[in-house]
Length: 414
Image (cartoon, rainbow, N blue to C red):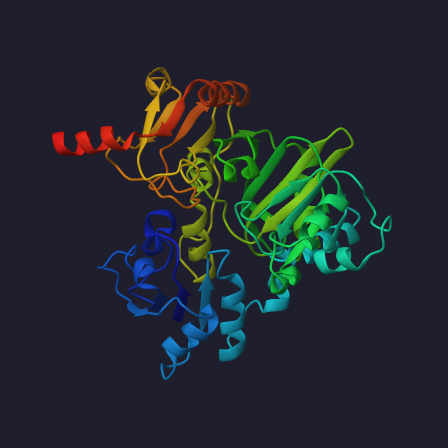
């Protein structure tokens, strides 16, 4: 096959050569210079750089203009799913179109689909609908979330005490520009622990699946506090709910990352993506099951000989978790970490990644181990033990901005 890949994610995470036989298939990667740089140079493939300054689909189409036809277009990043669909449509290549992607990308479309299937979702409206409604007409009045329709990692998400305060903030200006209004929604803030379910679905049936519960929230992480999750039991009820949500948004053969809220009345849908989870979800999934989600998905869709999979059965004390510490809120490129030694030496610390005071961190929001002050994987153990470890870790460890003078002296010493 001739395969076109919209390249964004590092090979360390995806393992392209394990997922695609590059000796058999003719593979072309199109990406920006920095995204092509995260691929192994020894891959037998064509690499085409795009500027990264304009529309992704348009840049990809310009990059491959004049090349022989492709048989398959692959887009693994959530930021490229719509672009991938647009490229398929423009080139007449089989696969998902934009209408197929929207229910797992647009938060209004996805919640409408889930609610139509009889599953509970937060009450919601597009922002333009909410602004046009008369006072008192909105279906809820309490805490309200303002968020992008296609956002990720809780970026640009704000919580207000009431619906009217959210709308008043928008009307007052300074929160959103006029052209941005159509790209946002408001929804009811539902309180409760947040779970995520990850795996691979084929023809509506789970090939591999695991459930986890967050310690902290993605929104709190965006605001500067650490985040993690630990694997939990996938009960029959949780499995049934998961398959119902996936069917509602039309995910039948795909990777998936589904999030829900645990309430006294049952699970409430939060959001879903036709992709693998971020942070160290892929690594902990593989540790628990033996299945590496991205490369196995690539094997499956490219006809790999090893596409069949039998996840490792779960045994007592065989669960894993991950944690990540944000650096984007510190206000600088260098940090100082204190109180971590006992946790670092714990037998539960399966992998520990920590920046020294003279190693720069990324100043924009990231979940990548390579960008943040502190991250790691914990386990194996049972869920309760892992949960306690992460909560103690978050309570006792301190990550602070390194003093610029101290940092300068450290660099001179080194």
